[in-house]
Length: 225
Image (cartoon, rainbow, N blue to C red; front, side, top):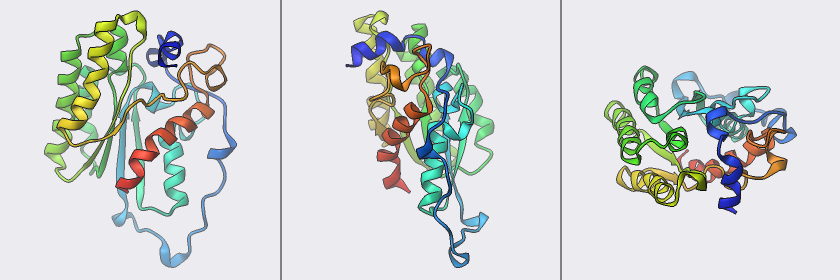
């Protein structure tokens, strides 16, 4: 399944993700009674930091990308968290390491790191990717020591070669273990290579695909809230 998925996935991250809409991520959240309203000072921030997957490139609304779907679920449960979508299409780990600094000017309580796939598609040495991702984590924890960390795993297509693919895949569980990060083994599980969950070009997930991405992340993120 993974091999077939990545035969299609080759250009996916470099170009972006999804379009269309999904009824399941629309509509009103549960009514909040006045005495249960959360004040701004009580609200905590979840920063989703990633590439086009996080950004939701190609969707009608950023709220249809998986971070936006997760915000909807959070609101429905009346949890005091605000999602900040800091996805940028085409982002590499090196560029992310440069960009993260100014994003940390606002207090972050949970940090979700979704980067590295563009490195893999460009054949960037895995040691460099791992070093850049570690620098990003170090910057977050240096400024906010109590911040909870989440890492999403990724793979590269078979065309990148078996040795490279194995080394690349190993980056993510290694980082998660080293930094005590909650870990999503494969962000695109159940979506990559599934034509009905991707746009007509076969490489961009639809909003239905993002619903599954959100579910993959929610399993790991929800216990941290």
